[in-house]
Image 1: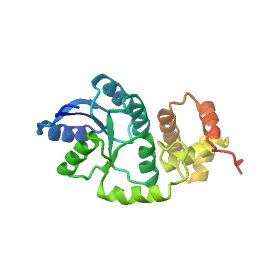
Image 2 (image 1 turned 120 degrees about the vertical axis):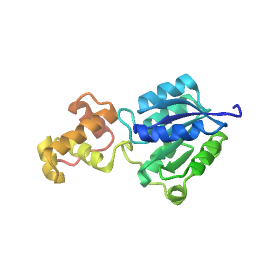
Image 3 (image 1 turned 60 degrees about the horizontal axis):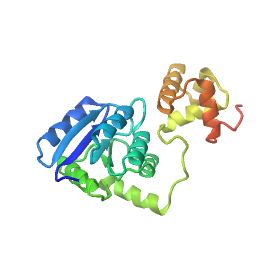
Image 4 (image 1 turned 180 degrees about the vertical axis):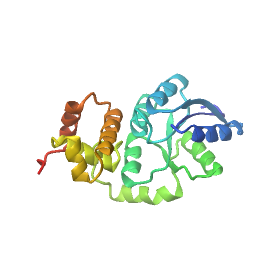
Length: 217
């Protein structure tokens, strides 16, 4: 690795990317070599630029950050992924770690903390923000039961579970006490995140992962 650390930022929010861009351009030892707005683009740019560090958001359209992290770390072992996200629940932290992320920061981190974290993971260290570190220690001591489809939110997983039980959108809405439109939006998001073609494929994938085995009442 050269003295200058090559960085790619992957985040679907233009303002976040602009803020990171401004920081990196102000520092001589960090070089921004690419920006991505979703996981698929992050993978393509990482392949093309071979960065030292990818700053990865978790919740992005299309391929999510966990899946993109897994692909990048498997294909480019010399590239470190530093998760920079708003979410700090145990499932997200655990999924990112299992996918190969070397660090996990929340978006409230200041510029000095972000710079230190980029430098640390680029040199092979693991680093976690102060609010995440306690969760990481707890997860190492008591790893949670593996959650199917960790890229989904809890609500999306509930919807997929009900879908796998054979319920239609109206029935799912009644069970979860939400509107049918809300269920339809969740179903569309699930299809996008898991790259599913239709409900039949969703049911098969969900049941293979252990969801939907209890029959609807």
